[in-house]
Image (tube, rainbow, N blue to C red; front, side, top):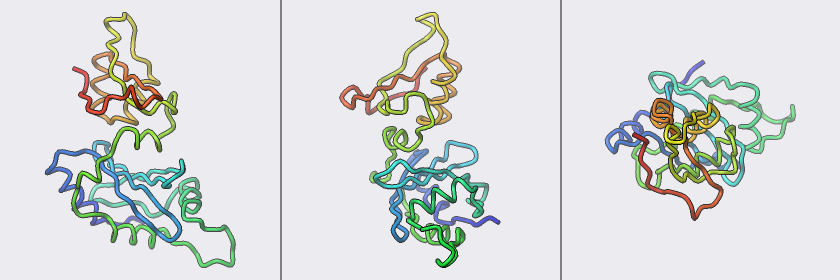
Length: 195
């Protein structure tokens, strides 16, 4: 079963006007405090749900027409219930993902503002399935051609997960590695894609 998230349609239009490909916004449902991440440079679009103050995170695909499958995988459902603080007991009222997504839809902001800016550090905090996940601060590009080496598949995967498809494609075809550090003082805040 799918459900249209009409709120994403308005948010996406606002993002397009400002030439932005990702954003985040807060969402609270019961005891669950979420940092919702919206990526539109992926195909299909991705909606990520992170626990504020924690590392619990899962993603769902946004299908054409801003539709989401309301039937979650067992792993994603478990993570969602964990964030919501739902105790797995038969005596509790049955949890409904349809109701969860309907409530989320009612709380999606219509307009992108600077407060919705999604930083690389925020993405790296949640997307931890990459090499050296503790290194969340971007510190530049390495031109592997000058070093007579090749960009690794692990680095390309990290570049794609944290920086998006455009950065991944440029890095792959130009043989560039993204460089990362765990020291915020070495971070580059305003970066450009390799050329």
